[in-house]
Image (cartoon, rainbow, N blue to C red; front, top):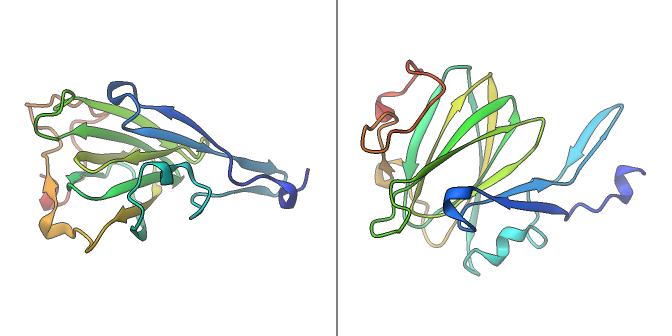
Length: 181
């Protein structure tokens, strides 16, 4: 079958165990052949996240490149949905519930996302997320929010090794920026 005849709106859905259906994991349809591969990361009509998002949202796409050993996060706010994916390399992703009063407050779950699987994780508002680069990597994320973008100076930060949450990382000496220390 040629990729031109491929159905691009197929996304298998699973969920991070701790959070039931609140944190979905999407596996997009990937067409692989001798030249490489092609896949859809997001479609404004067909992606299943639209059943979860507010009707009127701004969409902001970003890429970050990290070298092996870099840890970014844990960052959060109360209005942004983040659809995250590793386009190149392999990432250890952590999702932490920081919603006050939530029955899963303080629970966290980790997930390895990579270029091999193309899996996407949808991190809802009120959940902190951070990732550790297991290899050199390129991380892609679409941000969905109403109103103004919640920039760095208005985001919450949880220290990566905060003893209150006991998050297990695959390192104890990550490369960090000042904000994440």
